[in-house]
Length: 291
Image (cartoon, rainbow, N blue to C red; front, side):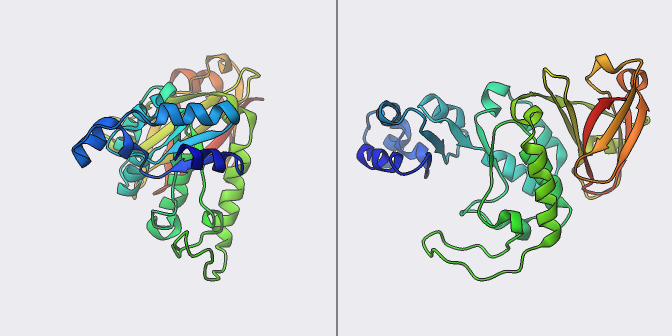
């Protein structure tokens, strides 16, 4: 197996290891009734001796993601985030994103892969785009599947090496083009990410629980604000911006994936918050600048 990994490392930049947790000694013993020696620390170490920059990504389940990262993997599948997004409820997604950044930065975030249904078929229109904004503007490795950006709906076996012709979904193509442009920006690639708390817009308004919001902030002052109403109902909330340096300034919020643009009082945004009223599965990815 190590020889096979060395062969692969001579041909590409990284490898995804199927069901990687099955050779962990305790898992192997529960499955086969006999103890196995540690494999992954030796295997990953041997490969990196010859190809230092080679990357390992683990397909892993049963809450063993952190364990696999300690075994020498660079990244682990974040299947839990995917499952919670499929369920369509904001709070479990938000709770998942409370994990430490040392862990989150090593997770492979995805909306589809060769084992899962196509995202365009599994997620309803609107919900698909909202889930993508959450997935790919969170920290970690952004993992896209061939055909996802064109909105392909037919799942194919990777062994088939061919696929039926499908017309591209032009609306999804345009959406992913805008999203990829944001992801490529230095503030999102190298900046500091923070999950934000959304307060009720008024007493008794429960829909603030439907929001997922976060920010990206770079040392050069670049700021991004991501807000998603991850629900099938209209929702409102008040979101206090984590940028105290914007107080006493006029702040422009320009949506990078839509047409919206707003000018607001910075002191008000920092002290009282930004009022948001979004349609079902609505989202904004704001560039936040002082005018």
